[in-house]
Image 1: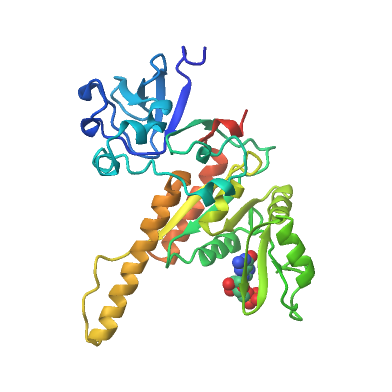
Image 2: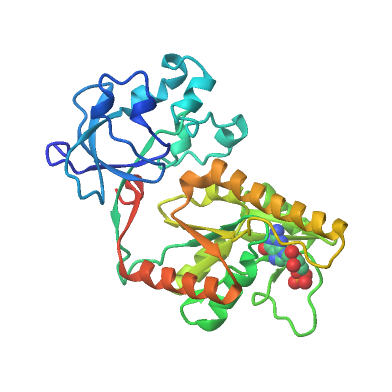
Length: 329
Ligand code: 5GP
């Protein structure tokens, strides 16, 4: 009956170009969309082709889109990878075994089907008495998201906070346990890793550092918005109805190519290689994790990126956003 009112909304997890899809019964009737678009599904009567509109389109005509079931069978119906590429369907890639094992088993994980197709979503607005949504920053090479996070928090420490990390390094005299870090022994840290307490952890100068789930909870318990910057692999752990993460992908603006100045050819080539690496890093994250991203922030410089992030955080408390329907049921 939800269908009759056409209250079914799906976030597309792949790009679709009907004119390049050989399987469609009628190319002109197809609805083109891009990954991340929100589609209002008008009918699911046909098991193969749904009718849908794109939310935000002024054009009210519904078009045909492949059903979830049909799209999941893409490798069977499509002639091969090459044609799938041509059909603009390359984004519904097969998740690696590792990714699938890493998924938390929460119903919201779109990775539970083997191919990325659609994720059912609904509008959600945080109410004043509800715990603030978790803000997750992921960044490609050169984005310096930790700096960005620290700056936004320093401007408004009553509203925003970091999750206090754990470390095995010795406490410095000016530091207080539970403020800069939770200082723990190596044994304690290792036990916590085994008990899956951390969303991420790593080694730096032979000391262990990690951020725990509990550290996020304790920020939220104070009714503050918790901002974490993590490796994108951590997203799987954080995508739960408890945290309702809003994921911001920070990409540095990479200039096309830098003009060669007076510096040596070697320095010029090195610089170009660095830019190339930055571009590659952004492309890789986009391909692997783009479907989990709510917002892309192109970072020109620190100050403007900071202002933009501040604006996003303010809207997050005031406005409604699309979230997986399983988070609010
Ligand atoms: P310090 O010991 O000087 O406070 O921190 C040194 C370095 O430890 C930081 O620059 C950062 O690279 C790393 N670090 C600090 N907190 C964390 C954390 O929560 N997780 C990880 N993986 N590394 C951290």
